Image (tube, rainbow, N blue to C red; front, side, top):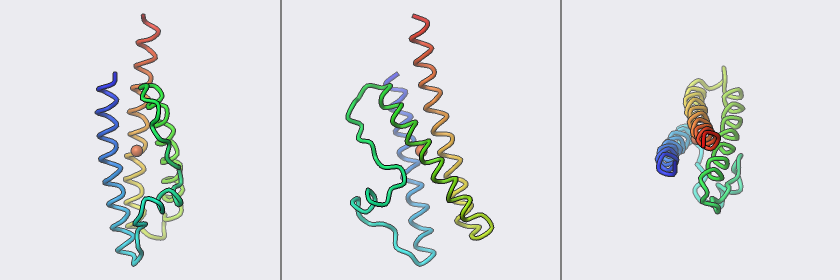
Length: 121
Ligand SMILES: [Fe+2]
């Protein structure tokens, strides 16, 4: 399942980068300045960052599922904050939230497949 997981995580990483781009552009449109350094990202993160120190596929999946669940929670809060106040930001956040829900579901499905393979041996 390593190849499947690697492909999925790469796809998600590219989409997360797209989210960062959408959000940075929206911050600029609103006259703000996006956080420019990784040190600031670590300080301001909602979900932290868990180093993928253990390469075992189930550990990686578990770490990433937790990260997606945290992202879903964080974006849900932002969606609620922007609703009826800033329709453009709201729509961006809603589309990112939908992606995060899909990421979490994709990873859960792979984790379930691994569990099924283990029980059928
Ligand atoms: Fe995600």
